[in-house]
Image (cartoon, rainbow, N blue to C red; front, side, top):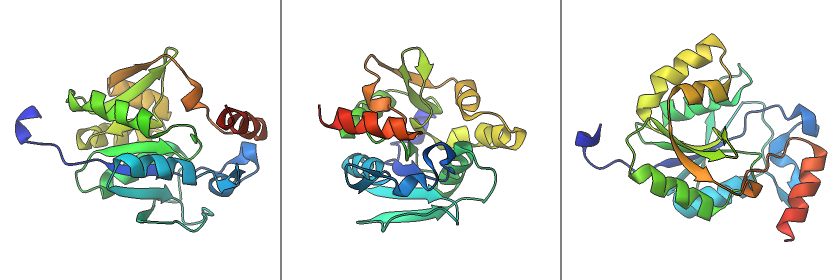
Length: 198
């Protein structure tokens, strides 16, 4: 892969197709500090990517998307972030995809810049953070060569974490897990709001 010339810049993709059942539904429009949850990953991706998209289901409720944001509608089923990732890689025209989940509002541009710096020295199909001995597949860079394996995993109903681990991604070691707080439940919203005040 290294002989193909310079890699095209990544497309930033917010994965927003989940149901959000644990937080009461419609996760993308849940407010945190007066802003919809989806606005935080969009802001972070805009810091490092010229092209940014939201990947969502047709029925996903989204706030008005400000700035240059594309909307990529993924298949209605399955309800799994792996579905959104596979769709993003298909639509990205061969560009790498810097994927970030809708419910990771504390990931900022600095975190993404560190991930992209790690990716520059790598030819692996994916580069993902390892946070306290756990791979974080929902904040990671994926290259087009990952697509066939991820498509097979999606068809087999594999968990996203297992599918990404099977890619043998290069890893970025992260000591502080605060940025990777996953906002799944109302109590997570409260914790995120507290962390924003720090």
